[in-house]
Image 1 (cartoon, rainbow over the protein chains, first blue to last red):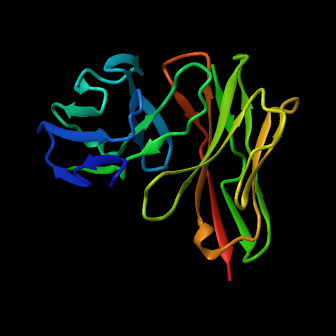
Image 2 (image 1 turned 180 degrees about the horizontal axis):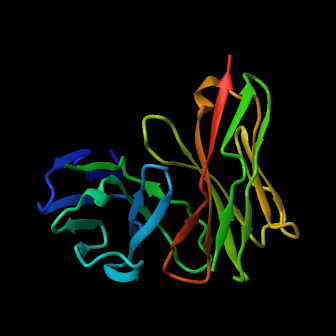
Length: 115
Length: 116
């Protein structure tokens, strides 16, 4: 059973299109994230949701909109895709109650290529 | 603000030898966690080991150990008896433990190559 399931794994699309990436976790974790990994492998947080509530929105363009219908799901919708959006997008989950030291469990990543 | 520095872009080690990957950090948070992740060429991210800032003992997980020196603000990863499958990119990360945000800040990574 996959712990953090992320789909699709690959996404190739044209500039200007709108696309979504889905993420589901079956670990019972209370917090989910979207991270972006660029071509130099730098990992940067985009969003964090704790029990369905948006906690972190790290200066991400408004074209990116996360949605968390329940604490097991976190989707990412991207409008008007640009060439610079090409990257690998990782969903992750963790249990982050105060003092908790759980590491992240990552999804397999979505390689987005905008042409 | 938190900052993670990994000064070794690439490292080589002979199979069966030990290797240390460096990580230094900076934070004003009184309670924080330090983490190491592995990213093989297949692309997935794998959590390896965790060290809490108040933990007295260095963390160990199988062949992985974390050499935590709080005064020096360093959290180096030691891999013993390297195997070919250890060839990957390794990321050091930290997180403030006094928040529900759970945001982790990652270093730039170190690419480890294990030679046969």
